[in-house]
Image (tube, rainbow, N blue to C red; front, top):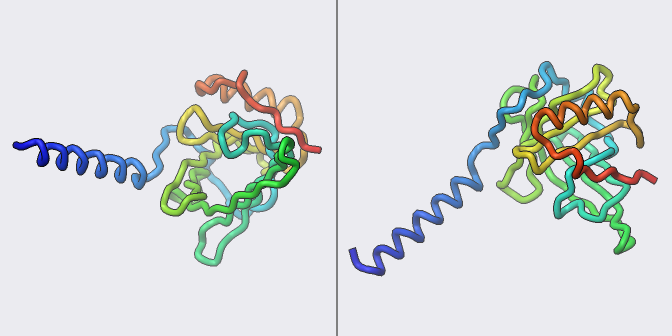
Length: 177
């Protein structure tokens, strides 16, 4: 095979691999809440803590609001205040159930066809406090319907996250003024 054909084959293989990884279904081995009731989960949640990442870096007063879309998907509205820039930042996305609507396993997209896992792994019976894992150990959130969370819930969620392999010492505790 000549050099041009080898380069073309290599480039094609790389493009196919990238496309597959970008478009493959969201997978996770974490145990999610089941049974799950999306209607009870909808509404506004305050971020209590997160493993920091690019979009949320420097944000306080972070909230996530979930509403049903007409097509059955979930509208996602994430907002936070960027303290150093002194302005609000917003990201609008959409979520779909990964499998059954009775499981707390969703996939969320803020960028067209690219989805990330959103796995609700802990949730109190009144749908007031939630622990959410992403697809890997880089993404984790503790959420509450109020701007704070009881210590016993926080400690139980932290212990579960630690046992699940998350670096809880790296959590950012969100200021909710």
